[in-house]
Image (cartoon, rainbow, N blue to C red; front, side):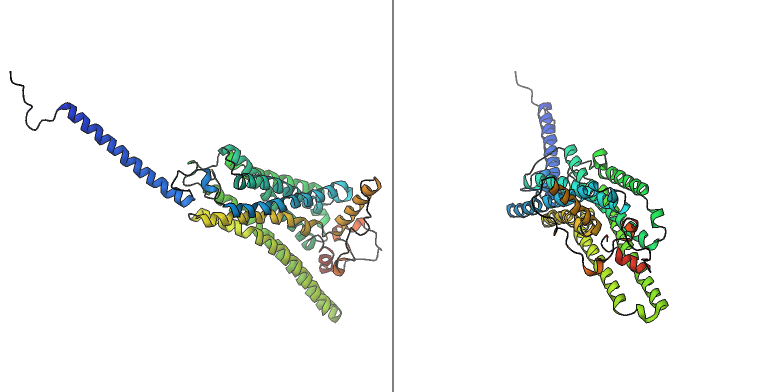
Length: 409
C-alpha cells in the first residue's frame, strides 16, 4: 500500500512546533542582547571595566598611585584631626568656667563633630577605596550616614558659632540675656537631632531603588540622586548663612567705627581705624577662604553628579576633594579654639596639673604662646565678668568689642 503523501502547502504539526520554539528562542536572544547593550552603556558611564555588569567595583576607580596618595592624606590628617579636637574637648570639659560659656559650648560641639568626622570618614573612606571592602547596602548606608552626620553637624556648629559672634556684636547690650547656656544647649540638641535624621534618611528608605542603575548616584552606591540634591542644597544653605553672618559682623563693626569717627573727630581717625578694619577683614577672610576652599569642590561635583553622568576622571577628582572636608576638620580647632586666649590659659593650667601629679616632667611655662599685639591686652567681651579689671575700664564702642573678640572669631 502506498504511503499517503501530505497535502501540498500543509506544514506538519511537529515542524510547526519546532518553528515556534525557534522563534521564541530568537526573541529571547534579541531581548537579552538589548538588555546587555543597555547595561553595557550604563556600566561604561559608571566606570565599569570590560563591560561587566555595574556593581560596587564601578565606584572603586582609584589606581595604585592614587590609592597611595589618598591613604597618605588620610593617615596623616585623620590622627591629627582626632588629637586636636580631643584636646579641645578635654580642655573645655576640665574647666568649669568654659563649660558655662555658650561660645565654648558651640566650639565643643564643633570639636565633637570633627572627632566623629576624623573617625568615621577615615575608616570608611580607606575601607572602601583603599581596601576595596564590599559591604551590603544597609552596612554601607550606615557607614555613610555616620560620615554625613559628622560633617553636617560640623558645618551646623560653624553656623551656630557665627550666629553667636553676630549676636555678640549686633546685640551687645542684650547678648548675655539672649544667649544663655540653656538656649545654647537647646540649639545644639536641635542641630544634632536634625543632622542625624537627615544623614540616615537613605538607611531609613530614601535609597536608590535600582541598586546601581539610574537614578543612582555615581559617587555613592545605593544613594538616590534626589537625596543627594536635598543634602547638597541643605549644606549650601548653611554655608551661605555663615557667609552672611560674618559679612554682617564686618559691616556692623565698620559702620559703628565710622560713627565713632564722626562723633569724636580726628582723634579716632587714621591708623587705628584702618588697623581695625584690616584686622577684621584678615581674620574673616581666612575663615571664609578655608571654609569655601574645603567645601566648594566636593559640593560642586555632587551637583554635577545630579545633573549629568560623571566619567572616571570626575569620580577620581571627587575622591581627592572629599579629603578636603577632613582637612577642614583639622583646621577648625586652630581657627576657632586654640586661638582663644582663655582656652589656652585653661590648657596651660591643665598641663600644670598634670605636671604636679607627676605625669609630665617638663616645664609648661612656655607652652602658651603670646598673642598678637592687637589681641594681647584684653579677653573677649563675653568673659568680662570673670576677668579682674578696674571698674573704670569700659568698652567705648562696638568696634572695640569686635577687637576684643577676635580671638574667638
